[in-house]
Amino acid sequence: MEKHQILKQYFGYDSFREGQELLIDSLLEGRDVLGVMPTGAGKSICYQVPALLFSGVTLVISPLISLMKDQVRALNSAGIHAAYLNSSLTPGQYRKALENARMGRYPMIYVAPERLLAEEFLDFARNSSISMVAVDEAHCVSQWGQDFRPSYLRIARFIRQLPDRPVVGAFTATATREVQDDIVRMLELERPQVLTAGFNRPNLYFSVQSPKDRYGAMKNYLERHREDSGIIYCLTRKNVEEVCGRLRQDGFPVTRYHAGLSDEERRRNQDDFIYDRAPVMVATNAFGMGIDKSNVRYVIHYQMPKNMESYYQEAGRAGRDGEPAECILLYGGQDVVTNQFFIEHNQENEELDQETRALVQEQDRERLKRMTFYCFTRECLRDYILRYFGEYGENYCGNCSNCLSQFETVDVTKTAQVLMECVRSCGQRYGINVLIDTVHGANTAKIRQYRMHENPQYGFLSKEPVHRLRQVLNHLFLKEYLRTTNDEYMLVKLTEKSRSVLEGKESISMKLAKEQEPAVKTGKPKGSRRKTAAGLPEDAFSEESQRLFEKLRSLRMEIAREEKVPPYIVFSDKTLILMSVHKPGNKSELLGISGVGAFKYEKYGERFLKCLRENGG
Image (cartoon, rainbow, N blue to C red; front, side, top):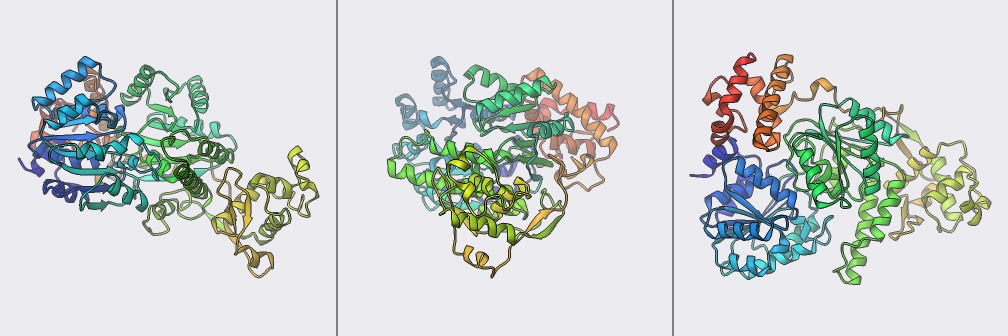
């Protein structure tokens, strides 16, 4: 069997996506690879197809138990024998899995990095034919990445202890150039084929909102998307508990996930989300890595995350099936303070020496600034994200809140001069909130303590709304007319560009929305939600197709309950949409639908054909 036959028989696809074939061919030729591919681009296919062609075992190193379970379950459902080895197994289950592995029953074994140097596993690996080591979420090996895990540093050491070096593949969705270089170095990749497939996810709509009532805005959105599955990310466990509790009281089918819950409750809640028993998940960033739920239609960040890498990875869990999905960030000024606290009290990098920890902290502060700028830019949001990762777009995507909003250019020179003069006259000794309170004329204990009520600019902008002052100040940071220090106090400082404005030689203009945007606005009319699947024309998904899609979805849920698997493991939404539009009437036509392979046809095909016939297909 060759690679195209495997792709069709087990995964149901007729052709490879962009970049997949290059990485697969490189691995089959014995060449190491580094694949940087956006979420939903099919990274797992890049090592799963070669694994089925190699004669030996492929070890897939994965950071989370949930990721391993999800992928192994999907492989088994497709007729591929696979297993995982992690702390969720009892000692007896672990030994049994290793015994089966020694007998050659699994072409793929998923393993946690913490297990690699355990004597029992090392003995198995040294006495087995290991053809390939695939490192998933490879950015975790880099201390400059957003999710550094010291356990990933064991991978290269483990590979060096094998009698014959296997080919090594590293895969990640988010990695700046610096992190990519770190991955190659830390995993000791040899002359790797590096592929950056591009970070753009055209099916995702991006929006940043700053509603006065965050919960009310989010609730309003959920009311209009009750039939959809989504994730709501919060910064703290307390926020998760509050938001989840209020949503339950308001009648939404939600569950929760954070590190403070027991292992059993986290597992149960995660399963409820994956199986669509509770289609809305409220969680901290502890949730989601490797969750392959394809029908997540929205990701709402209830607060701003600490960096762009985390944001894009979390937002990217929406629309993995390629269908339209929405990524909405609800920003509030306190988010910066909370994230700053997390950076200063980070306990995750204690294994690093003091000097390196200080460098990582400084980088974290800089990334927080870039994340904050994202919340205030008036340029295309997608373009801002792509530029962060080293790509350059069109400056207009037509599918983000900025591109779909009407702005007017406003001269803010006088406001900017007052803010800069306040920075200068106070000796550049204070942070953002003190400056805004001063020019706005606030009578607080802190202002009196710092004697800022005696500052020449005190109350000079009392008629300007505070939110507008904050917008202007952030614009000055974005355009480098001001800067903040890279420490926990974030003091505001003048720059070389400040002088020409203060001296009246340069004016400053910025884009401001002509009218207040509706809180948590949806990017596209609701009716257009599923019209773009697999390049379908705009009018392909008719009311009849929508009705047939719902019938097929009900059948999928029935089968999922019978087999005790998540619905998307049976077939993805995208596959059901294609069925409802093309209405296959026999085996060959159904096998022509993307996502329907030979194994799945044997399991489910006749039931779906019967459903199509009975409902006008």
